[in-house]
Length: 580
Image 1 (cartoon, helix red, strand yellow):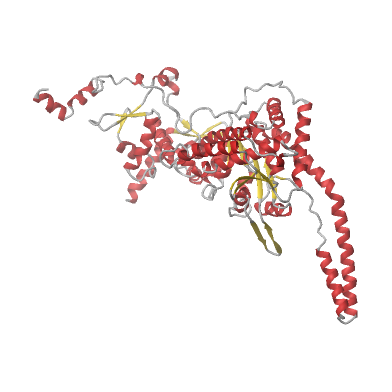
Image 2 (spheres, one colour):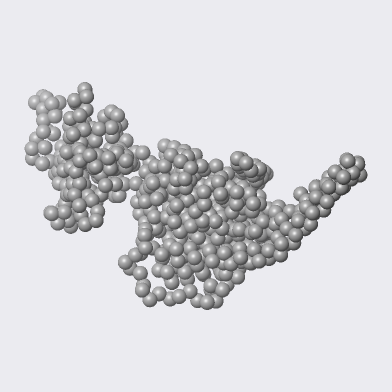
């Protein structure tokens, strides 16, 4: 190399010439068509389909038939089928894992599906036998309630008569003793509570009272997401998660009420089976306390794809014998377990326990906060092994509804539960991605929104920091993790150190497949604009009402033009400069 070449290299001349001629210093051309299509940021790929064959045969057959008749993903019927098993067994059985470690068999599950997905029809089909069993239990208990009430009234009459005799005798010791015994006899007569297995969208206070009356057991099953709004304090104004946190773990619950005796439950066991719209998943993540208190980490999530628009309008109905078998066996399970006050202790075979240990060992490194793919949802993933054990208990009891307490949980059952655990893990990643659980991914999306609107050929970190909405990043270096995410997904590429610039990808498919008129997104939904601007729902609606952020009408909906977003950002910058 000559002295002149060395000097030119030192001042970056080859890079400048390469830019002028559209070439990279390495000799390749700066041809954007060479870029591969970028991957979607965050959770990628298709969520796995619910492994319905892991369920007890009679549950699997009915869930599959209901999914066919209603033309819904089998995930919905499968998850509600698990919730139905939990309703029957929760509080009546626990899994003895090792030493003092036990797991109850209740679960919280939530399925997110769009409107018009026939959630209610699936719920009715899967939970109808529970309501029938509840009705049968009420009919069976009704004579006992009448008898106990009558006995109590008679005892009260005897006690009143004994009291009057004690008064007439001017406190004769034998008469006072008779009166005291008669009064105690009243309290010894317990009136049975009318059985209740299922509640709908009840307040936490009401649910706690019902659960206490029912011996610490209750299921909340609903095809709507109203329970989340209730938990967030719709009626009380204050979030109340205590029952649901303790009810998942099976902890002691004490509820103090003004003017009423305190309600005490040694082991509160709650089942939740819900179907909500996907937007609810995002909303609860933003609600105070839902994640910080640990509630979101207790749900088994399912986000099946919608098949609306491709459904068979003449689907096969559920065969009568399949529906009958499901109804009879689920009611049989309820009846077999209902009177168990001391929970059954289910044991694991050595082979099943070995599978549990192997699964736990595989999960552990994935929880690492920096290197694990589950690190950002460790609050959920840390409970995966426990969830698998609970699922194993439910599958076992469903497979052996009469004599399950006599049999240990075997390796096949544990294998099925692990498959379900892997399914729910994949869907939890999608759910928490929907919630914005990974801050670097969320920030990367913010940067990508700006890049797609501005479409710079090249940009520096400073360019991005200056162009992004105020408050998106505190300092320039805070951008780097987001840029690294974009680079890893193929959206941008860092140029050689000579320029210290980053190039935005314009991949071939975008130019070839998309008509020129639609290359640039021009209108944004309010929620999208809220995300781009990094402001809250209340603020964006206030700005719209004040006219500081412009919108246009598209039928019944309103959209925000891209130029209106840019104008609003400019307005914020002008106000910031004025304040300075």
